[in-house]
Image (cartoon, rainbow, N blue to C red; front, top):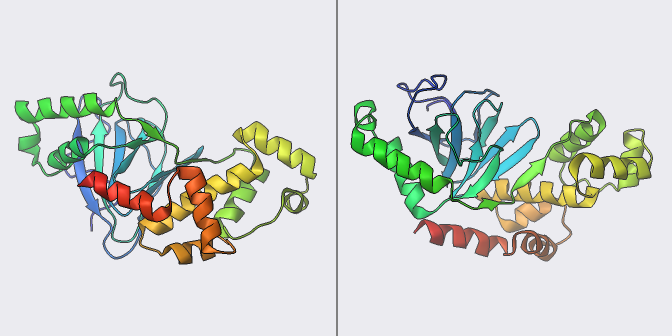
Length: 265
């Protein structure tokens, strides 16, 4: 199996003049995570099957099927692909105008998905032809028009908040209150609540719910059942989990992934 986020053999991602290129990766029977790294080329991580979680110093971005996460050039990151995940990596020269300057999750149209897959299947000689270079230009132009999706979990810089984040990621079913977390990290409830809002721009409850959405999408993209996902995240019932999911993303888990599949077709 090729390295998860390593370039194809003919790509050098630290050459500024290189044109837009793409590659495919299959995570086989196990999920796979690349070590943290950076490169000059900007990158789109497109999930064809399964899902990808992209980690950067300031947060996590989730890539469910048929979405992509945009990573500007120079940003340290690592990517984790779910079991049997299939992804495409699109590499775009740094400084390309109209593309996002921050990490974000993008909805990807069937046209864009097919263009990226086409580029990923080309040999080095084919990728260098004028016709395929023009296709890459059309692709990048369309990419700049894609809407963003709210699948981002901010990760705080403050050491005590990062301690809480690490604990919640390790045990998402932990339902400790703000007061209980405050005692664990030697802070008052009021101080901790104020710090969370100051650092993350949201309440502690909203932050934990967003973490649950990211973790739910990771599990569901890997084929874990809705019931098992609800149990893993500490919900008292499947219906309570579905209600939270629908309130956050506007659809039940089944409808959310069904619509993603319909979009692919």
